[in-house]
Image 1 (cartoon, rainbow, N blue to C red):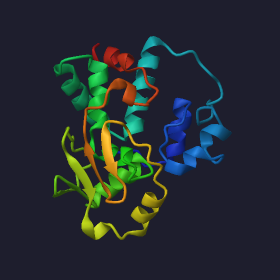
Image 2 (cartoon, rainbow, N blue to C red):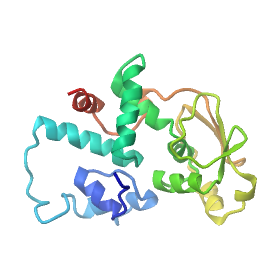
Image 3 (tube, helix red, strand yellow):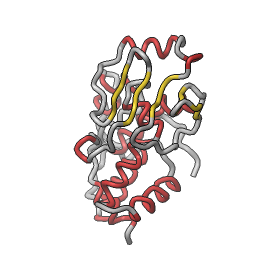
Length: 207
């Protein structure tokens, strides 16, 4: 399936909640969900009661859109999560959180996951000292992620450092001044602030 390239605000409206796909804009009055909190399209304002399958599908689509992944990637990650020990739904979210683009976003080096994905693709980051340009790379505890030396003078990254809130996930250790961070633990379910009922996704893929 090709990556969606249309207006991302339509995705938030389709799910009926903010997915924070446009960074800072999502926190302002310009947010489409705040202005038009109904699904896009001709029949968007007619609310229909979802079936059990419909609820499962919506949760799956919500997660895909949060992390910006394709259906084939979602299926691959679910298969990985299903083989791991523990709760499959939580395993799935943990895998998605450990994607390199999400880690860069969680560290505060990008204002959205889409921006993080672009920065990684353009080769601005090192993982354990080696240049990596694969956003889907699954990181692990102990990995060190840092901005490449040649990229540290970019206006965009300087702006991100100046506006960094310092509120990074507790499973990460970030040194904003050095544009560097490390993964100190695997993310627990309570560390993942995504409003999703992952058990519905498990039910969908287990049919």
